[in-house]
Image (cartoon, rainbow, N blue to C red; front, top):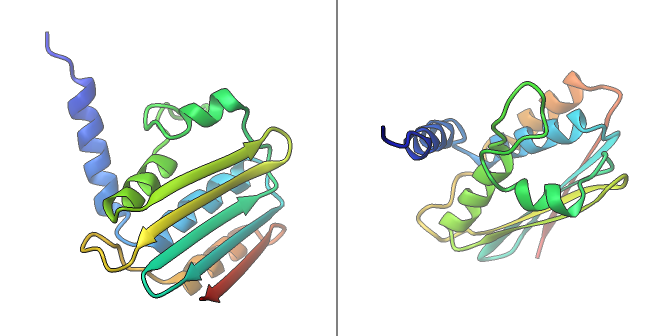
Length: 155
C-alpha cells in the first residue's frame, strides 16, 4: 500500500494556497488564531521599505512552550481539539519563503506570541496585500471585546 500522507499534504497545501491568495487573508487567519488562544490584544504591524514588506502579528494570548513552537510550523500539527491540521503558520511561512523571505516565531508560555514575516516585494511570487481595511473591520466586528491595533510604517 502506498503512503498517502505526502499526496494529502500536497493537496491540502495547494487548495489552501489557492484560498490564501493575498496577505490580508493570512493576517485574518493568524489574528483569529491569536484570539482563539486567549489573546485580549492583537497588534498587527506592516513595515514597508522599497524592497521589503515586514508583517508582525503579536498577541498577549497563552503563548507556546519550546516544543510546541518547534511543531507549530508543521502543517500536520495543531493545538485545536477539532482538527489535526494547523496550516496558518506553515502557509504564511511558505508565502514568505516563496519571495526569498522568512518567518520568525517568538513565544513565551503565559505571555503571548509574536510572528514576524519578511517578504521581498519585487519577487514574482509576492502576493498582493489585499483588503487590510476589510480584514481589520472583520476582526473587530467579530470580536468587539478584543483590542485590535494596527500600525503601518513606511521606511
